[in-house]
Figure 1: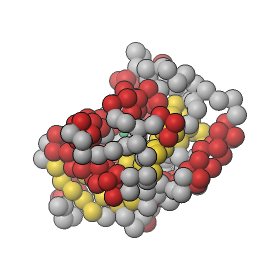
Figure 2: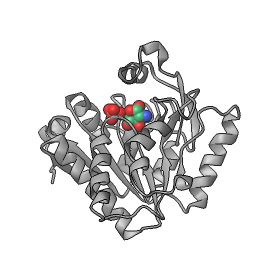
Figure 3: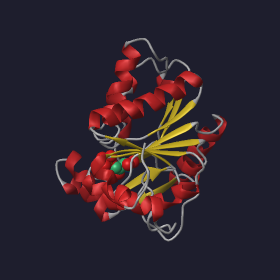
Figure 4: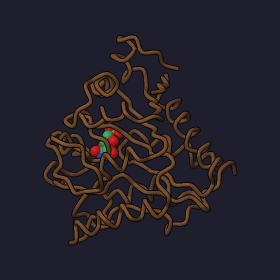
Length: 249
Ligand code: GLP
């Protein structure tokens, strides 16, 4: 895995944005897998800046998002669709018809998951998948489990995830208890993976991701088996990784 250390969140955001913009410029009709959470917000802002300078074009880009809460209407201000619209899609020339995110309101859970996998397949797969990481090693909303989920599915959220995400809601009781997420198999099928992590609270899980035994109860450890993973993290998130002797760029 390639590990890039950033000194500040601003620097981290510029590096992540640069990698995504290069991908778009190399393959202007390619497929980006996108992520929510606080970690990539700065990178999305940087991408918008680069777009406003006329240095990137999203006209023919397609996107698939990692996950969506179950039970939140599309226009709810905590839905991940709303997050993507506000943080990126509304500010660049992407065709909204080319953006995909699971429908959190569907009654047909299995059908929605199958449809999402079919969309990704029909687009030719994901060229670059952006990931954040949960404190428990979740990627997308693949929570610690006894098996790695192969495809898009609906999960019960871990109590730790519900508590971590409560900061975005009025109270912890308002956080949805379930979500749709690409499976580990879906994520691992992406041609390239770009993981972004910030802050001391991610230091343990980042080390575990890199050197821990690959096991489904720390889902991010599966990334050790992917051939093209770049991790961009700040000094605090990398503390333990650096102590262990990993060389960062
Ligand atoms: C949520 C998202 C994940 C994200 C994680 C970490 O649970 N479903 O995709 O990686 O939060 O978020 P943050 O970047 O805010 O720490």
